[in-house]
Structure formats: C-alpha cells, structure tokens
Length: 291
View: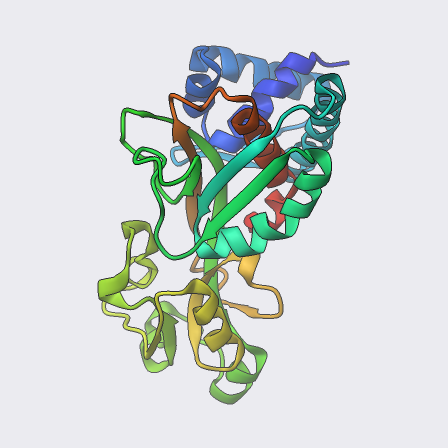
C-alpha cells in the first residue's frame, strides 16, 4: 500500500515539472516532495519520473498513474459537489490561448456545467490574453508565468509541440531527413510582427533562418493550412490529429501552461471549483498534451 498524501505530492510534481515547482504550490520544501515521490516509487515498485537538468519527465508508468489521479480527483470533486449541494455558482470568465481554449477547454465545459449547474462559464479563447490583474477576466491560462504581484500564479501542465505535415504534402514533396532540409520546404508559421509571446517563436528555435511561406496569427488557421497541404509547421500535440509528424528524432519542443487569478478572488468558491476542474482535466488529457 502507499500513502495517498504521497500520491498528492506526485501529482503536483507531475504538473509542475519539477520538485521545486510542486513545493512552491504546496507550501512545503522541495526535498520533502522528492522524498515522498521516491517513497511512492518504492511502494509501487516502479519509476515514475526520469530526472534531468531540464526537470521531471514522466515515464510510461508515471503517465498511467497521472491518469488514475485524474479519476481520483474527479471523484473527490464530485463528492465535494454533493457536500456543497451544488451551491457553488456565479460567472467565471476564463482567458486561454486559441488552441488550448478551443481544443481542450471548450469540449470539456459542458461536463463542468453538469457537475456545477450553478456556474456560468465565459471562455475568451483567442490569440493574446486578457488579464486577471486588470480584472478583464477572472482566470487566465497563459504560455508564461505572469509577474504581476496581484496575481496568484501556478503551473498548470506541460505540453509538447513538434513539426507536422499532411500526408498529401509529404507524398508530393517527400519528407525531410535533416533539419537543413527544411529550408527547401514550404513552411507554415506565425506572422512575425504579430507574435504576442516569445514562447511562440518556434521556427527560430528549430533552425536559424527558417521563414514561413504561409503565415497566420491564428494557430487554428495554421493547422488548416498544414492539413490542406500548405507545408510543414509546428503544432501542439493536441492539435495534430490526422497529421504526420516530421523529423520526430530531431524536433520536440516543450512548453508549459500557467494558471492565474487575482489574489482578491482566487479563494472564492467558484474560482476554486474551476481550478480543481482544470487540474483534473489536464491530468486526464496529459497523453494528448505530451509526446
């Protein structure tokens, strides 16, 4: 048997991508988190993380355990809802990136409404973000950690990106075998002067000098360009359905989503309910978010 509190610390470490990040969120020290995760690994006789200088990476056993954790957290949330007699209510406006908001959050929101019928959710899913600090939204899911001292900020989940192309494009043009081959291909990407976060400068990170021949400020539009044979482009794993991964041994980018809310309202029941749901959701969808 294992200690369920060790399991809770493991989930926090998986979401934060490091023992230090988990410790900050839980209000304990990083050594405690590392020790408790090691104890859980011993109890389960399985390695859950691969430790590296870049942080923690889930093993296949760890990823399966995260999925189990999502189910457990969902059960706890349901029990909490019964205890509160569904009294949590009000409007929660969430800002999220276009891709994450439309592909991950939007399909799951009807289930949240069934769990919390007193809540009304307003989702602003677009390129760019609205700010909880300026009271434009109640909660934001962002590509980087806001530095506004008025906000309570937490790491939500890692996610991976890679190069993708349509099967028909690769049949016509052939698949590149090295990074240098990309210069001879049609590329899809962001409009350079409309990039709203440095985390989106994917092509520069893959190889200097890469420039898109088709560009959009919208990641969904880029996906459609790629799907229809417009070229090779970088997409989050959760938007890659039906596409073929290109140069899988050479290109894998990892980013992280962060969740923030104004300190003044972060502890409100409606915000806590949505936060709990969000963490359970990304844990459940982790196989879609990561490669």
